Length: 255
Image (cartoon, rainbow, N blue to C red; front, side):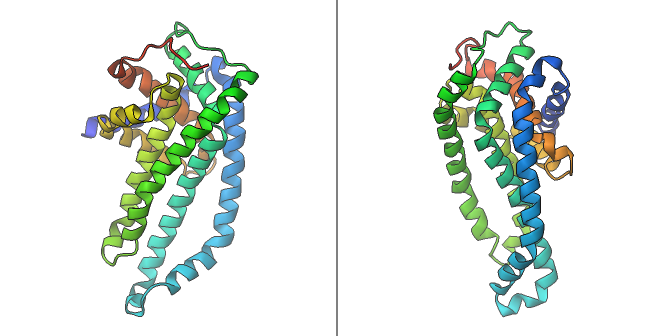
């Protein structure tokens, strides 16, 4: 269990290293711009709105829990921060989906020593593929919402809500891992359900990758490069750990 967790986290570190490769630089510009803009806006909103939102949430608590006010405020603030970062990451993935797909393709080609025959997508092909990519991103969001609802309910149940930040962290790590991995798999036209089965068989590996990715979103300045680093790291994980298992043909890429 521990070894796959650390191995998964290592793929994010490999993704950070890949950002320095000259062959990949042209694919990093748009994901970086989108990531920076969304994180700046989200940080501003969190700073401006956290206090009134916390007061509103505390007013919803029953009077017999008022003695836990400070602890509950800390838990709520931790949840707000975690959810804001997760939401930004998922939203950035939606907006930058076509460019992340291109980056995943370029990273796979780089990992294969350029032996991987990509489609070399042009701007026109990017635009043509956008509806499909956005559909896949919305499917990810629907999946994320499906699991967020029971976690939200647990967050308001006395005593159980003490475990809520930990459960939300695991949830965030899992969602980010499968979201960033999906770009490489979508390039190979691997259906969502088959992706889900392959991810489920590698849970510790993906949780290790997603945990470090989520932690890096909490580090100022470093969070600006999380998206391209995570796409690069997840694609490397796909090439080394999942591609052979799924028996995918590396030349079968969507155009």
